[in-house]
Amino acid sequence: MASAHFLFLALVALSFTVVSLAADHGPLQDFCVADSTSQVMVNGLTCKDPKLVQANDFFFSGLHLTGNTSNPVGSKVTPVSVAQIPGLNTLGISLARIDYAPWGINPPHTHPRASEILTVLEGRLEVGFVTSNPQNKLTTSILNKGDVFVFPVGLVHFQRNVGHSNAIAIAALSSQNPGVITIANSLFGSTPDISSDILAKAFQLEKNAVINLQSKF
Image (tube, rainbow, N blue to C red; front, side, top):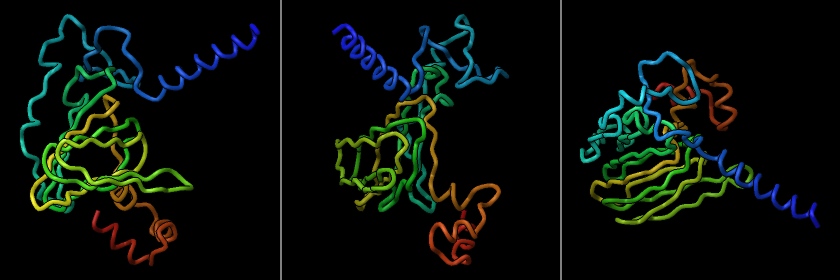
């Protein structure tokens, strides 16, 4: 009986450990405002001397501004991560505003370090994510003003404005630095290029088609 009780407690402890590893590490002090001048390399950013911390270290202004969507994909992401607010360092959260022109898209991408919860402020969006191999199941929905949708960490996801006017969304992410890997940019716009032979075989395309895609990125 005692061994069964111990095993249960061990499993509970393990479950909490797994959950804790799924997000940024929690802070061990009130705050750790990022010191942009430090040359020390750590997993995150080093802390500014608390005596030098000011209110401005926790402040950002700009999400009221409309993003410029005059680009090939018709969208603009305005991030609010630790790069914009040093006080986010170690807190495990960030934010972004996304503007969409009519029929503009936020192209398929992933956040390697964060789940995302998206809220539509204006307009109508088609959103979706794809599960991992081997299922590769597409989960998609149409969102209207006030609707909310969640994208699990690491999964490829996208948004598209399916209305005839501009759309706006706010995304909250579970990391101070969620990262973003835009699939097309990564594969066809890497430096140096991924071999066109590799991409042609992976996408089952003619080599010239791959070279043409690479020239666009």
